[in-house]
Length: 113
Length: 109
Image 1 (cartoon, rainbow over the protein chains, first blue to last red):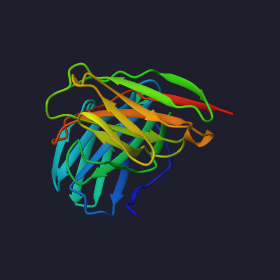
Image 2: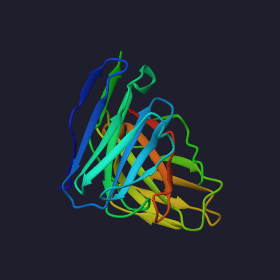
Image 3: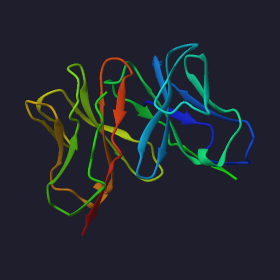
Image 4: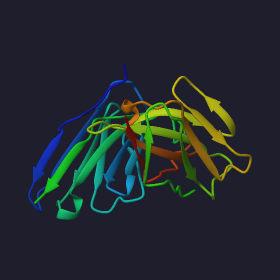
């Protein structure tokens, strides 16, 4: 079974803190994605990576950065967390591009107080 | 990139067929249409994908008209366990893609 794991299911951080969300996939997929999910807005793409050390901005990259040092691991970084970044964060991986099946992790619910 | 529009919610009863439509008026030639299902506390999972006409698998059918400006996910004889949020995604070979806002389907007994 394809497995995408995320480091935390729930996370509570304070405004201004640096936050790391980790994602690991075990299928040797080239592509990895970070999404944010909010009620009424669906899934919005923050960043994606199509290879190690490669990254591309998605629709809402402001306030976020990413790191992909190894093929299986993709990290989302909030340099200085703000309350408007309280959300559900979902990581996904796929073999190819936007038309290939994406495998999602269970999500991390981040609350910034 | 095509913007997708879906109904916010739908209700149905067990045993009925449910059709959820996604509008994507500006779909590009290379775009495919993919549908995902999401249960509470889980990430979305792939249901079905198509390019044109009709695709059927063991859980759903996908109907895409010739102009490809919309697509309809059809769930035959739904059960309570089909209660979930359904997302349509339009994307191409690159990572140029856009999810819809999702349709919350509630199946009642």
